Image (cartoon, rainbow, N blue to C red; front, side, top):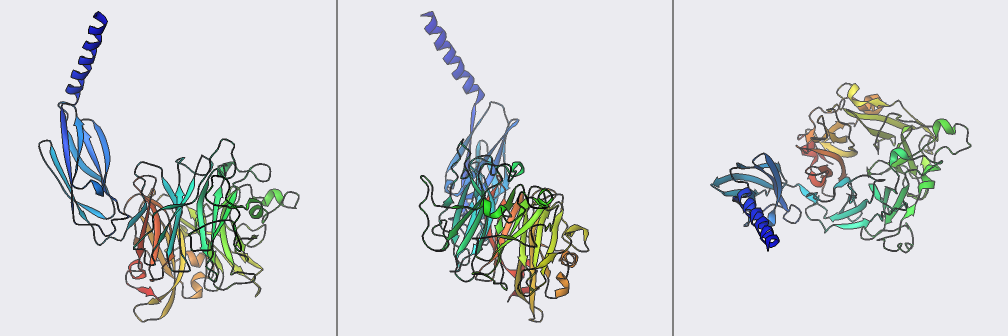
Amino acid sequence: MRNIYCLLSLILLILISSVRMFAEEVRVNIRLEGKTRYPKTNLWMGVLEAQIGDKKQQRTIEAKEAGTAITFDVPQGAAFSLKEVWKLHGYNLVDIQHQGNEWTVTYKGDKESEYQYLWFHNDKEPFRIPSIVTMKNGKLLAINDARPCGNDIGYGRVDQVMRIGSKDGSKWSEGNYVIQGSYSDEGVRDDGFGDPAMVVDSESGAILLIDVCGHTVCWHGNWPDGEPNPVARLYSTDNGKTWGDALNGKHSPAPQGALCSWSDITNIFYSAFMQKGEEGFEQYRVQSLFVGSGKLTQSKLIKVGTHYRVYAPVWTKNHGNRVLYTDDFGQTWHALGGKTALPCQRGDEPKCEELPDGSVVLSSRKGAGRYFNIYKYSDDKKVNGSWGECVASDAEKDGIKVGRNSTNGEILILKAKKISDGTEATLALQSLPTGDGRSDVKIYWKDITEASSYSSPKTFAENWNQQPYHVSHTGSAYSTMTLQKDGRIGFFYEEEPGWYSMVYVPISIEAITNGQYKVK
C-alpha cells in the first residue's frame, strides 16, 4: 500500500507541476482576407515567431488554417509576444492584434504577385538546384533536387522531381518524380541523382537530362584510379511525361523498384579527356567532374552531325572548368578546344552560352562576381579553335561585381528590340546572388548587339548595366532561366525559408531592362 501511495503522490506532483508550468494557453486566431493569385502553389501564408519567456518557437502558417486557431502553452508568469519573421510569396500580413491571451493574425491574399512555390521546404526534406526549359509544345518543364539525405550527392539519397507548367507559367501540374535514388550501404551508382542540366532539341523536341549520380562526394573522386563522380543520362521524347535511357526507339525496362531506366555515361564523359598512358596525362587528367546545373546550351548555328551541337560546361576537381560538346544529342562527347584545353583553371560551377557569331562564352562561379572566357572557332567546319584568357568580371570596368558570396547563376543570350527606336538588339543576361552571403538574387544585363562587345573575354566582362533587376529580397542562391513562348523569362531559383524552397516567377524583358528593351 505504501508503494501505491508513493506512486500516486508522484503522479499528483507531476500533474501539479505541469499545471504550474503551463498555467496559460494563448490562442492565436488566423484570418485571411481575399485570395492569393495562385492558391494551388502558394499554400503557405507566412512564418510567425512566438517569444515565450526566453524561448522562441517558429510556426509556418498554411492557407488552409485560415478561420482556425493555433495555441501556445505559456509558463506561469512568462511573457508572450508574436511577430512575422518570414514573408512568403502570395500573401501580405495585415496586422497582429491581441487582447489578453486572445491574438488575431490577419493576412491578405496578394492578387498581383506572380511568384509561385513549386516546392516548399517547410521543415521537411530540402530542395535544391533548379533547371527549367521551354519544351517543343511551348509548355515549361522544371526539375530540381529533392534531398531526403539533406545534402549533396555522396551523402545519401537524392531524387529528381519535376513539374510541368503552362506556356505562361500560370498553372503547374502536381509534382512528380523523374528518378529516385536507391541509397544503399553497398554504394551503387544509383544511390542518388542530382544537379540537373537540361536542353530541348530544337528540331525533334527530345529532352536531354544530365545528372551527377552515385555515392562519391565530388572532392573525393579519383578517376581512373578510383571511383569518380559518375554521370547519368536520361531522355524524354514525349514532353517530359516519361523518361528513360533511349533517344530513338524503346527504353530499357526500369530496374526493380526504379521509376525509369537511365544510362551510365561516366566512361563516355571521362574518355573525352586524357587517358592513362597518353603523353601529358598527369598534367591534364580529370579526376572528378560534374556538369554545371541548370541548362545545357544548343547551338542555333552549328550542325555537323545528326543534331545541332550541344555544349555541357563541367566543374573538375583538379583543373577548374572544361567544356564538352556533342553532335549527336548526348550519345558521344568531345572536349571543346581539345584534351589539353584549360579555359578557366580557377573556375567553380560553370554555365555557357552561344554568342551571335557562334562562339561559346563560359561563365563560371567565383567570389564577388563571375569568370568569363570565350572559345572562338577558326575554321568553317567548326572543328578547330581556341580559348581566350579567363577574366574576372569584378576586376573589369563596369563589370559584374557583387558581395562576398560564391554562388552559381545563369547566363542567357536572346534577341530583343530597343524600345526607343525599334532597332534589333541582342542582350546577355546573367543572374546571381548579390549580397555578402547567399541573398538578393538579381539579373544583370548587357547589350551585345555590336560584335566589339564580345570580341574578347575582357570586352564581354565590361560594361554591364549597373542597375540589375532585383528578383529576390531575401536569402536566395542558385538560379536558372528560359525564354517562354509568351516572350517573358521563366525564372526558377532557390529561396529561403529552408535550404531551400524552389520559386518560379515570369519576368518581362521590359522589367529587367527598366523599360529600355522588349522581346523581338
